[in-house]
Image (cartoon, rainbow, N blue to C red; front, side):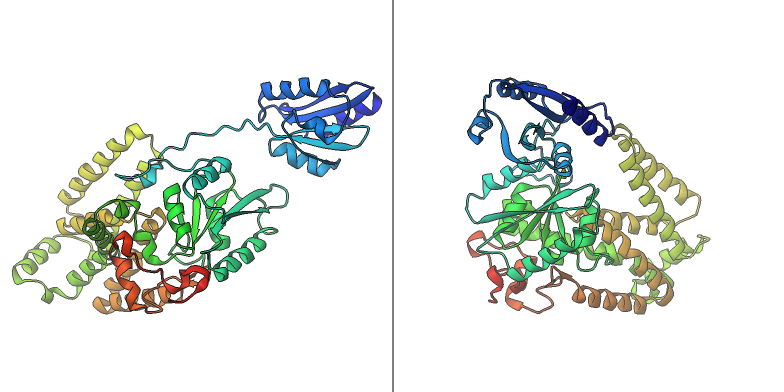
Length: 472
């Protein structure tokens, strides 16, 4: 009994005498004793009592005696492993005489139902999304992909605070070069990150160029989107307690595709895809074009419009670049405020910021009517992009172009365009070209990047994504 009590005290001290840690004595026939350890906050009380009642009638400790319980495995006692299992939500039975421990599954972790993701709502199609429980997420994927060669692997990272990373792919489709690149990156995470706290950490480790403004991994919370990308030979990565799935490799044009494209008619889906690509160009270049025109290149405008602009701007005390920055900052402040405020106040701040503040700064003569129109159209265009990550990148990218236009006019915009194009050509996603099929140039695959193809005629992916790395 002295050994039993001292062991219980040792276990409680190991868990720093936390109030929700339980180490309770279990007595068996033939004077055998054991200690059941678990976190009460992570365990179901009824399941614990069922285990205790079942264990008390056991007379031996053979493997078959555990069949009536939720035992998963038995192994030799190791304090470090015991701590790891308890922290994962298991109940661990420590057998004192044989110095063995038996793990029981009974996690009672809270999780929500698979509702539709707020950021990826669609008009037609499935209205369910991933949750923070990975077993549920894997079930949502396997429910759609009923094939045996969907391979799921797990990598545990971290030193003290361990986290599990799952990655999955179709064996007959996945490109082995992409898979090897991902596995090398995951191996590098093991000792560098003490657990994963945010999705941004995983992006930093997996992306080929983490300092680039362009995302090289696609994030989604939609099982149907994961299913579609797995079928194209891509790899999906998921982490503990996160509803987000990460898809790689991707191209820049992958971010302009939406599930709604494939649920609509061919012409309609193609039209909206072209609208999104046009919105990208508008969001990046429109403010810069306005600044360049009113600063250096009035001559390209019709005479009447040029006269009106000159009269309007002549009354403004600031240069066009300062005007544009003032309105841009106001819109960014409104956007940030709408994210942080309670939902009941979001509409109010939008009306106050968009109408009242906008009207006041125009009447005060701080900015012109035209710059408000240009920046408002730019803001709307940036939100058309279906990817939140690329949406943020677009909003950041327009500022360097605005400064280049203010300094050098159209020449500055052209120089910025060339630098941006060179940067896109040098980017890769899991060692696959990011700007494909433009670079490397594959003319037969360009139409499907810009137009929604008929399902029975869907062309091949860019050569980097072809099954098993075969070139077509």
